[in-house]
Length: 195
Image 1: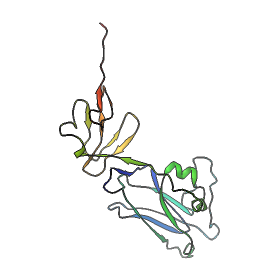
Image 2: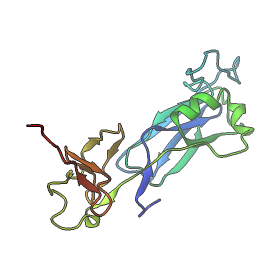
Image 3: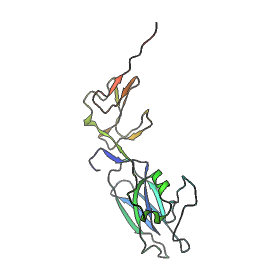
Image 4: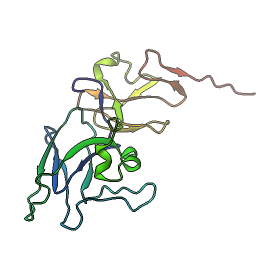
């Protein structure tokens, strides 16, 4: 997605499965993101014992962690964690990004990943560049655009983190409705008064 207007949403998680697996996202400097899944001689497989909303993926044969909010591209690195018993050396290891709720609802054991008939669900977010907003319009009566690197929560409950220093988020000002990303997208509401 590099160079596009899309990025992975921070509601996604980086997950890794396998015995004694150290997984990390690479080429996302300056961030360091990764997790380690472990196992012992008595527990080479795992399963969920919780109900809906519980995730078995909490360290035993599976681990998960948050991802940076600006992530557009990633590479995953997988290696056997340096455990003295050597377990996991020849076992299958896998790492992927998936939407948090999808991960909770669909992955109940490492074996579940092997039987997937589709790729995991992910959420994307989008943003606009400063150059997309006509000069002088970014702070008009109808529309307000934020400076880069601010978290904006809209009245629709959606939040967006601007991406890098050349992106921007916008919203319609109070008493205006519409889509601030469309030309003349914010329209005023006429208020009448009874006398």
